[in-house]
Image (cartoon, rainbow, N blue to C red; front, side, top):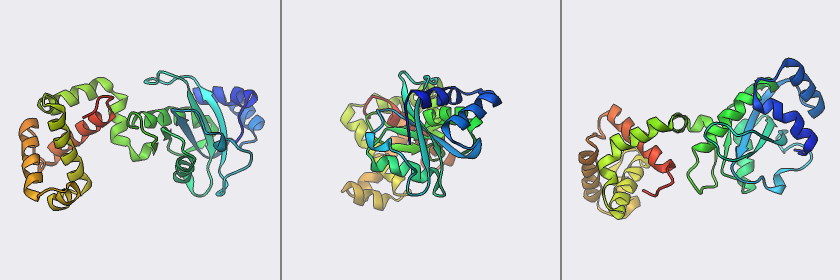
Length: 246
């Protein structure tokens, strides 16, 4: 888990993507990494904690190399980037370690099979980072956020989706809007159970039912129709990822 000018110079071309086979071989030798192996890339939105940069492997054998890469589409500033040679526990353990160290927000790429693929993995990790809520300290894996990743990859469509589905809802006063959004989020987290949602919200089940019915009227979508429910869930994701509070 080392960093510095030398390591950055070797990692940079790999993370930029499109590295030639000769460059991949040179970087592998210079970094002491196998050209083929189970790799993931981490992109952090804040400075990497000092505790994350240490000599030696993790408890599960993962090895980390920190560097930096040029901005990817959708990013407005440089990011802290790590190439991780994964141990048996895989990317889930890498994400857990960063959470334990208080890092974040951050995105973790899917597993790739060689150093030549870390450029593509870096872009996917950057997309995962974009699915973190503003101001959060989340460490998220792309594979856990694929629908949201699709949304952040096409911001013009996301904006259109939010306006089309939640347009009337967004005209309500903030307190009223937040109440309906919170009720929908809680109902979804409770697996569509009105009773469990009411218990979590501390209100009567009829109150939850009435709020959901009002939401259906405002959005012209039914929670009982799967395709329309997908619209609502995706629009909720866009709202969650926007900088404005619900």
